[in-house]
Image (cartoon, rainbow, N blue to C red):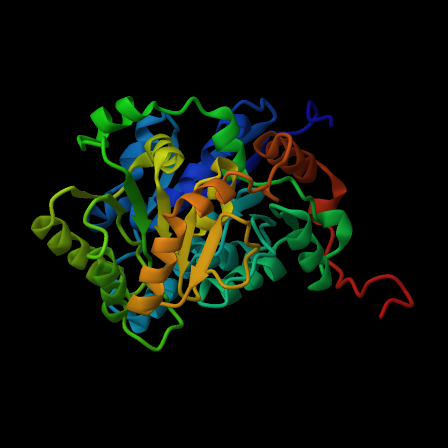
Amino acid sequence: MSCDAEPKKTLAVVTGTRAEYGLLRPVLKKLYARDELTVKLLVTGAHLSPAFGETVKEIEADGFSIAARVDILKFGTADTLATARTVSYAIGAFADLFSTLRPDGCLVLGDRYEIFAAAAAAALLRVPVLHISGGDVTKGAADDWLRHSITKMASLHFPSCEAYADRIVRMGEEPRRVYNVGGLGDENIRTMRLLSKQQLAGSIGVDLTSPYLLLTYHPETLAKETPPQQFKALLKALDGLPGYTLLFTKANADAGGEQINALIDAYVQKRGHAAAFESLGVLRYLSAMKYAAAVVGNSSSGMVETPSFGTPCVNIGSRQEGRILCGNVISCGAKEAEIAAALQKALGPDFQEEAKNAVSPYRGEDPSGDIARLSAEFLYGPLSHEIKSFYDGPKGAQ
C-alpha cells in the first residue's frame, strides 16, 4: 500500500455505548498507530448522557482524541416514538458533520439505532461504510433489522465468525468485501491483563467473598410486555437466591432502559449484598465475568464473551434469539418460574463443570489488527470507489 503521493486518508469511527466502545478500544489503538490514517473519533448516544453514566469519561481516560461529540438523546428514551425521533435527528446531525469532515470512510460496530443513523448519513453522502459485527441474528430486538440494514449500506464487512460471514454473503454482499476476522470480545479476554478477584472487589467497593452473579438486562424491544414487566420477573427469581451477591450493570438507552434502571436502584437499596453500576468499564466488566458464578440477563456479551471464560450464562427471553449458543449458555423464557429453573441449573455443580468445556466460535488471531490493516488497505485501494454489486452466488447454486 503506497500513500506517499496523496494526502492521508481520514477514517471516522463512531461509538455510542459503553459495550461497543469496549470492543472498539483495541481497534482504535491500532488505527491511531497507523501513520497513513487520520482517525476522527465521533462520540454520541449514551456516552454523553449522565443518565447512562456519561461514559465519554472512559474514552477520555484512555487518552483518545475526540473529534466531535454528537448529542442526540434530546427526546428521552421513554418509548419507540422517542427512539424514532432520535434516529431522525441523529441522521441530520451526522449528515451535517460528515459534510464538514468529509471522511474517506466511516467505521461502525454493531446494530444500535444511533449506529444505523450514522451509517445512513454516511452512505447517503457517499462515504463508504465499514461495518464490524454484521451477520448476527437477534430476533427479539429491533437491532436485528437495524444490523442487516447497515450491512446493505456497508462497503466492507468484518463479521466475528464464519457462520455470520456466510450469512452476509447470502444477503447479496460480494465475498471480496467480507472478512471473517473473529470476535473483538474474545481478543480482549485473551490480551488484557485482568484484575484478580481481590483487586476487582477493591475497585468496585463490593465484598466478593460470597459467590456472585453478574447481571445485565436490556429492554426487549420487540416484546409484548413492557420493559418493567420483563424485568420484574427476573427480580422475583433472584429473591430465591439469598446467598449470592448481585452485581448489576445498568440497561442501555433503548426505550424503557431508564425504567429498568430505576427498578435496579430500588432493588439494590432494599437488598443487602447487591450493587449497581452505570458502567464497569471493559477491564472491570471482563474481570467480573471471569469470577462470576454465572452471567445473567440478555446482553450479547453473555453469548459472545462468556464462552471464552467457561462461565455459565443464563440468557433470558428472545432478545438474543438466533445467535450462536455455546455449551455454557442456558436459554430460558422470561417468566419467573423459567428464570428460577435456569438459575438453579446454571449454579449447580454439574453445569458449572460442563460450562468450563465451552469452545468459543469467535476466536481470531488478531481481529483488531486485521480490522485496522484491512480498513487502511480498503481506503487506499480501488474497492472504496467501486459501486457495490449484488452478489447472487456462483452460477448453478441452489
